[in-house]
Length: 192
Image 1 (cartoon, rainbow, N blue to C red):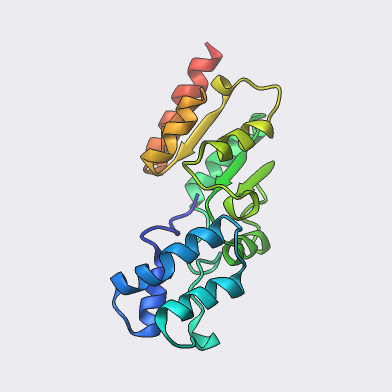
Image 2 (image 1 turned 180 degrees about the vertical axis):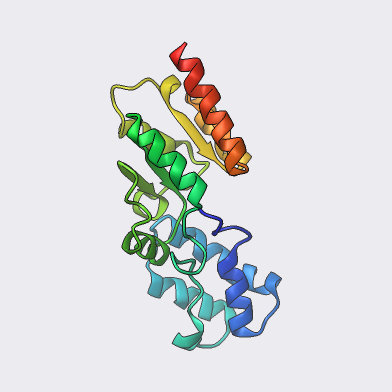
């Protein structure tokens, strides 16, 4: 888990690069972003849609808007330590992420996906959280495990709803300390 990817940072970068206000940038990026994050269009088509809505060509130098492993998607150290501890204890770690191809490539190259036995990326599977199908894909990656033995962690409350509906235990991610407390509570309850 990283501190990046919040508050629609690419829209803020686009606003800065194009010298427009944030609300206009969100309007330009919203629909093409949804399509890109579901893998329905590629990056070139993404920019074509934005240029059409903007009314003029956008120089390649102004297209650097992506969240990357270097600018904001690096993992939190305490969370990383928790994940490594869980993995060492025999837990299967999977990642379910809404992302776009440039961000996914950056995280992959930076080793951000390395701790996980499997990663399910919205841009690869065509669904975003909270689409129930993306959670079913995650469950299919761990076939002989009941959903009640799966702990799903997310920092957005609406993304916990489908996981609960499918029978998973859920944790709303907050501070590292709170997350560790919740994980310990759930794993202790399973052990007793």
